[in-house]
Length: 84
Length: 133
Image 1 (spheres, chains in turn orange, yellow):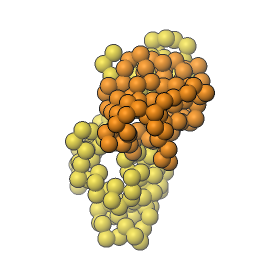
Image 2 (image 1 turned 180 degrees about the horizontal axis):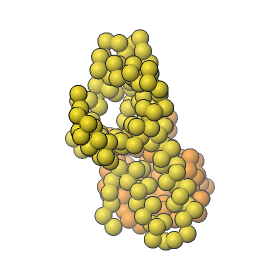
Image 3 (image 1 turned 90 degrees about the vertical axis):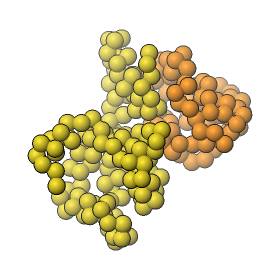
């Protein structure tokens, strides 16, 4: 199982995250949860996957993180459920 | 023992580096939470912010800090004293508090330039990457 390659996170995706954090659609607590999860160096499936952080979800495929989705937006792929 | 100059130089640094071996040893003793203390590099080493260590040390008090230092330097006494683990937890708390403050400053900043600078700090803290854009 691959590890996420954070260096490949596209600029447009990061700017989307920035804008949503700025307008508080994404909460401070959920950003902290994302940070904690990243520090555990999580393994992800080879195919499409999705991780729910509450006010947003992170979706990716294998090692590549693809997009941040807001709460309520559906995401494809395997749900990553382990505790963070 | 560090000289005064060496100590001040260390304090003036942004981060303290833990070798991959130290990270492995501390993770074995205190659990995966050790990984929350700083940024893990490609080689398994870890950079821990100096200000978070200083804040954690202040919060412990002299006696607990002395115990923590003993625990960190002696693998045999980890089961008797929790101070080492407490120090790790306080460093993590200090990092988290720093990130929370950075997020609040970012959200409240009206100037676009300063807001972006703040975002770059958050980005590095969250993803552990200094994106060059």
